[in-house]
Length: 251
Length: 245
Image (cartoon, rainbow over all chains, first blue to last red; front, side, top):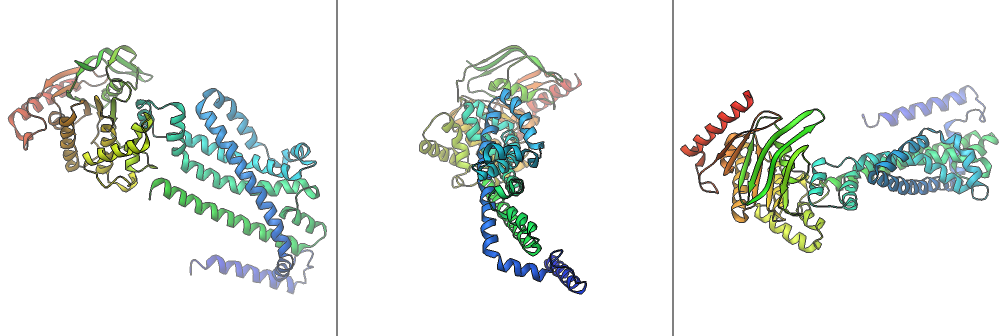
């Protein structure tokens, strides 16, 4: 019963929405009833699915790139205190600057001929920080006594990184990638909005396009697909994190 | 012949003096217990002997070369992502030994501490006593000339503690490294050591240095022998005096 509670609440809200729209004769372009959204979802499903895939692939490519860059930089900061001091403030600047504000600039640089590169770059910017800060914290999380043992056994700097610090960082990296993946999706959508019609025709473009044409049902249908995709991505990464942690701990 | 020696050594930390000045020489094949109250600098002395820390003043001379010193900490200090076998093989692999040979020796070391068959287990799957044995196997696998143990059994129950003490003595009798181990348990010190050094309250100085007669490994009921009791009383007295300062 308790597990069904969110389902029941959702059904109840949808029913109220449906009844209210019909009873109050709300114009469909203002607020279509759920049944109208369902019809739009069914009719436009192939288009929406293709758009969702474009947005998702932007986010996933960005996640991979952000992961590589963030981990490489985190290892560099772990190896060199001077580079650590140099890089950290810049990484923070990237984090606190809203992606929507950087978007027009990146679109000019990367986007005139290759808007998809601009979208990926913007999503990378957003996904970078949680992975970087997770990796940086993880690389410093090794047991100090294990560090002493490595020193005692004459391990070199690189051996310490690959055989002690990186493996110690695994739980932090898993968490960082989970957060980073969610942000990469948000970054991809925000970038699509900024790029507008010049950009890749992903889900955000579908929402903009439907909005321009006052196809409110299609707009909400696109939102439903976006939400479902976000939930699925989060669930997938949550599961990956659980499996990864289990493997790391050995139980 | 001395394996490691501290001469007029003192260590100061930011919060104040931590140890010394003390002078202490560890002979080859000697089993030395370092006893003292909390905060007297026992662990600092051990890290100096291991070469993991430099003294503020004085001189540390160490005979063992790279890979010939082993340390066992209070916690097992195992890498959770590695199996027991891989944990024990680690010092050999870091020294450049081929993986297969390192693993073969690691399995033999695990068998020596009574853990044959547990090679594939992860630390999280082991009890506290078993994890400590893995830690001991990792210390022994390099066949060290100097074995340093920092309150190695403090977190274990009394029965496991005594069993491990006998294991350490048996292993010591087999290859005779110099052993220094830190404890605040007088009975454990007298039982396991041929020599007990008492440190005063911090910054620790040497408050007593006692030889313990008797065969090693210890015979059954050694704890009830008159000789054992007499030395334990002397160590306790020196400890009490060192704390009173």
